[in-house]
Every structure is written in C-alpha cells, then in structure tokens.
Length: 304
Image 1: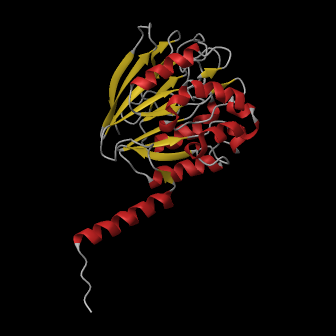
Image 2: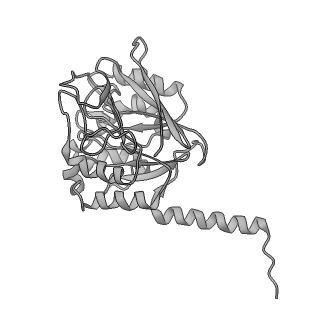
C-alpha cells in the first residue's frame, strides 16, 4: 500500500522533531510575547535593584521598563538586603510589574536566604532549576545564557566544575551566530567596592572559546562599558567579548576605583537600564537613564 506524504504533513512532522530537539538540548523558550527566531529582539537589563529601605531608584527604573517593550533580564541582587520573602515583596512593587517578561540571574544577596529559596519561589520556572540557577534560551536570532556566579553555592565555577561543563556543552549545542551571557559578578570591573572577580574567568574563557559576543554583569553599583577583550583583559577587536557592568537598577551608587585599560565609559550617579537591540548579525546598545538624569551611552557591535 502506498502512503502519500503531503508537504503539510511533512512540515508538521519536521516542526515536532525540531521542538523535541530543543527540549533534548535543554534550552528554554524565549519569554512570552517575544519575537520568533530571525527577527530583531529588544532586551532591557540591569542588576542591583530593590532595597526595602528606599525604593525610589527601583521605582524610577521600573517606570522605564513599563514604557519600553522587550524582554527583561534582572542581573542579580534583586531584593535587598537578604533576598527574603519580605524583600521580594519590595521587588514585586517595582520590577515585579514586568515579572511576566523577566528572566533573572541570582546574586549574592539572594543567597543570604538559604539556597536562594525565595528567589526561586518568586520567579518559578523562569529562574531555571533551583539546584542550578543557570539556564539558556533563544531570543530572536540570539542565544542567551543566564549563569549563577555564586560559585560556593553552585559547587564551583572553576574549569571542569559542573556549571562550567554545562556551559561548554550548551555553547556547543547552540552554535548561533550571536551569543550573550549574563551573570551577577563581573570578571572585569573598575568599581571601587568589588572590582574584578577572578573566580569567573573560566566562564569568560568558555564563552570566548565559543566566540560569544556580549556579557552583562552587575555587583558594582555603577555603569561601565568595556571594549572587546579576551579573558586576560587584553584588547581583542576581532574575537573579544564586550562586557557591560549594569549595576544601576535602583540600589545606591558607589564610586569607581582606578579605571581598567579597556574601560571605555563609566558613570556612577544615574540609575537606568541598558537597552540592547539584538539583530541577526549584531547589536545596538543604549543606556537609558532615570527621569531627570542626562547621562547616556550608545553604540553598535557586530557578531563574530
């Protein structure tokens, strides 16, 4: 007996197989309402956000988010001081208004509560598996990776650690032309409070080896943009990763220390969010300050 397979049936089978492959590889879907792969996507980012003792900064940046469509990433230290249930109630009053389009990364203050329990309770599946705190998904043509930079809590960030091995496997499984990773603590920072965190170098190395394009961090309460560089902090215009520190979500500001050699722009007196327009072959960035502030930063980059 002959079986006739129409183009429509074949397309359905192919679509189901592709969906299954995505599940197998462990990548999540993009946040609800975001463009399908191949379209331009908008990403809005900041970390170091809501302090129950003074929500003015978090409220100012939340108002920016409400005016701009796009996916939101919250880059750790979201609910001060201890990531408790009460602290997340304060976060909810501000950035919680865009919770349905937020994909977070945990910070050190989330882990002031054991196992960051309230962070994972608050965000649910959007925060990934509670035993990990790291996950990935596609947004437009880009592959995005949220990492857990609390190395002690996750069993280490060193080369060969469980998270570093997962990261390398995820990058190999998603050879997108454009890749962005975000995690709370930066490898490079001119911030006077924290500065460089060398524990995160293996993550930067894995991303560099896979030709990733952009890294977003927080932790220092300021805004800083670096020129593309390698994991050793050497300028690399051809393959280097551009890092942004965006600890401007609403917590207090802190002064800079001595600027790093590849630090191109710095500001420590404006709350705001970084808007990234992700194209199939590159990206545009724009720092959008809170109402009443004039500092901004903008530019474009191409994918490797």
